[in-house]
Image 1 (cartoon, rainbow, N blue to C red):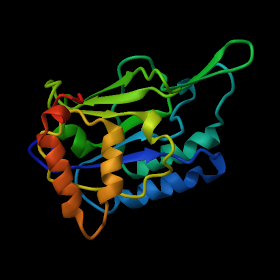
Image 2 (cartoon, one colour; image 1 turned 30 degrees about the horizontal axis):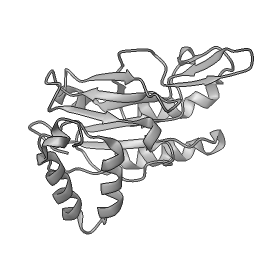
Image 3 (cartoon, helix red, strand yellow; image 1 turned 120 degrees about the vertical axis):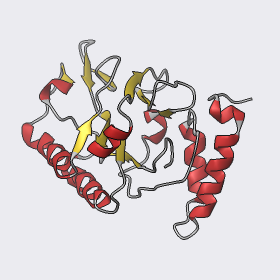
Length: 215
């Protein structure tokens, strides 16, 4: 992806919901990591936490359950980009009227990616129709042209991401994920990446995409 002066790559993830299969998510990401030397951004719903304090109230997570995620982060040399807003990205009401709140979604970047975007900021945003909070990633201090929005409620049905891509795209603006996913599904052919590039470029040049609104 070409937001900024230099190319970089992004991988969006929805980790396996079943804990006994979650190692497949970590193995997939380790494999993707080695496919390119471009600066790497890896984000969305990992379905796991890195630290016990990221899971509050009812229930708990065993250290052994978190270890696979930690190992993947270490092997891939990824850095947690942090966040602003409430700490949790997923909430569930349980018996007694209390809530379990967990940080299941995050953005991780390689050291090279973080150096390329030193002012990147991740914000947890409200999602009125979902138990997940979305991620709003601001790459620079230009809030209009360098922002990527990821809506967890849309990508939730997806399983582990198995593809990573690098696209020569400028001035992407705010990407509304439902339309982006539909476009990718319609045009994603590995040996015809020009279809994806052309459609993304068309969307990027459209005023409604740059402003993040639809007429």
